[in-house]
Length: 381
Picture 1 (tube, rainbow, N blue to C red):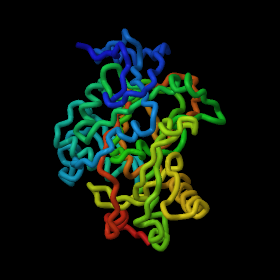
Picture 2: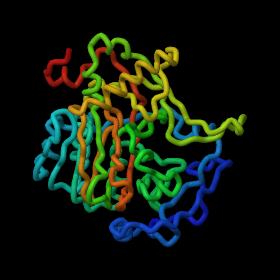
Picture 3: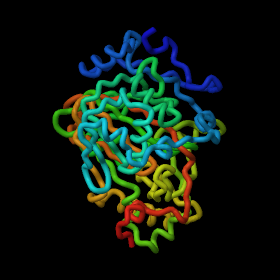
Picture 4: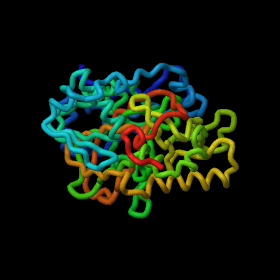
């Protein structure tokens, strides 16, 4: 049976009894997106995209995936030479010295398990990896994600009908709820990291854009490895081992005080974390969803966080800016990056993609872990 939207929207967990049924959308799909979905056998007759019923209360939202679990890191078991992946590629192009690699001549849907492990390691080393001209269905995109970890199924974000876990990134649809403008582009047009509020936050995110504007709409990524090394050794001592409060992009009501207004899910995680595949330290803050440093007064926390945001966002030598073409995939590691989608095309042409985010380990810090520069034998003082 072809994947399709359910007739009656339900929450992603049957234990959630208080919920809001979200609207049915009627926005016309871009032709290239429709063609991809129909080729994949997605039944669009019940509408597109599919929206789960949204949990009303914060405690129910907290209960989603609120358990300790083991994460098996695929990059940690990969051959360090990545010979299976690289030998099958037509070309491997590093886009900058610190971040970003493009692989030419491979189809993601055809990768072997060994190549998938090596891709996970490459993403851990290079932060974001790009593949153009992909023939990739939403189902195949989800299957690849399952190799990297548990698939995040969002409690309120729209997804491909019948394929929960493959969320829809469609700026024109988002604009029907929160209109964007040149001065306030909103949405993903800000520096952020995906799903920092989870108990086990996101590892690898895979965005496949089937439809992109002919001019503009680039995405930028910045390296958390390199941002950490931009700090002086003495300043690193200030933040090493400290924790911060991170919050969700979406909100819910407090069951006991529903009139108090919408509230975010909040979690406490390390400011600096270590990637389990590389063993390297990375700065892990983002302006969009890092609230405060635990144990500091607000004024103290704000000063330090704003400086860290500035270091991450303003050093162009630790960033990569990618120009999309139709049917391109980007896979990045949220444990070691922030990203920002440019809205310079101002909605003048359609953009549509599907995203699969996999959840990784609970963030951890190791004082004796090296920086990326130290591990590569580069100056880092």
